[in-house]
Image 1 (cartoon, helix red, strand yellow):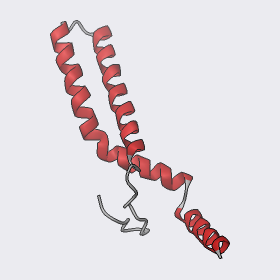
Image 2 (cartoon, helix red, strand yellow; image 1 turned 180 degrees about the horizontal axis):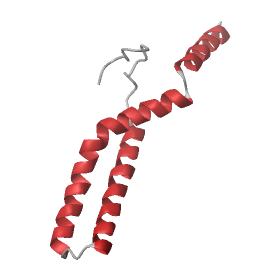
Image 3 (spheres, rainbow, N blue to C red; image 1 turned 90 degrees about the vertical axis):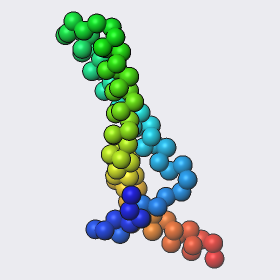
Length: 100
């Protein structure tokens, strides 16, 4: 991941633990998709238990790995949408003025 956005210059370098939300999004989406696919396969196909287990384990391991970069992007987008950099700068300036 880059340090700064090449378009707007927003810093992607965050404090430790910042991306825990991205990990939560990743887990919820990936495992939710896994459960949905397996349930749909159980309902609409006549697969035996062993192939269903292989598919379920493969998805449960593979999807979080594949989706993690996208979940980080989604987490950053949510953060920037809810707390734009302009507001962060205003808070820093107000906090600096109050300390004087």
